[in-house]
Image (spheres, rainbow, N blue to C red):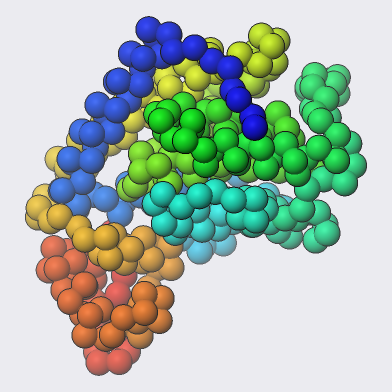
Length: 340
């Protein structure tokens, strides 16, 4: 089994403690939900923008926000599809149950979601068949990953570790940092390795319950200084696979991103005088559905959630009363959407 090498330094411990305290503050602040759908949409768009921008996608954040709303934007079909793919992958990851094991078949599904219509169909959702390499801006090889025949076995070893008791005792930030770096080093796909590795980091934080409201746009931190991101990945290899400094780097990113999230929440709480409402898990599901699908009828939600019309009404009533969801139309033509 894969066994990562790292040390818990005083600095790493300090960062983990601060990140956990910030996460607790944000968790308590979710009681005031007038701002929650707004911030979730912002986070989703920022993740899609930053993860694709790291790989050279030219679309701006406003372009990505428009695509997330379903609006038309400029740019190439390839650049638009890359963003739409990340949005689809994030929605799928966030739909998974908390605590669910991350298995190879689902990781391949994430790769397919991230690369559909941008790579040949025979390569999406499959491990690589040919050798590949990582090059710098001048085309010089900076890293040669393991050969194709090792892609599946090494990835399975990583996922076995992710699901093992050894990893479960680690803080989710540390676990996500290990999974991110190890997968990008295995480089098991012909393309899309960075996007899948960052998505795996998001997935770990979700499944381990560290970002249950999907407000942590950590890829913004990576994209803010791309060269440093690449240098930190390479530093682990230069230090004989010691992940300590990489973990400190990721933990610092979580702290900085949570601080920005905290500041945004504080600004939204001032500008939006919403009611205090403790959301049920099903109400959170409804808000995410309306965030991702825009308008929905009651019958649509019956099918999605497998509940009766009466139950849909019970779920929606507090959200409509609180002004989070707008009800438009009459009788069976009634639709629901998020308030702006």
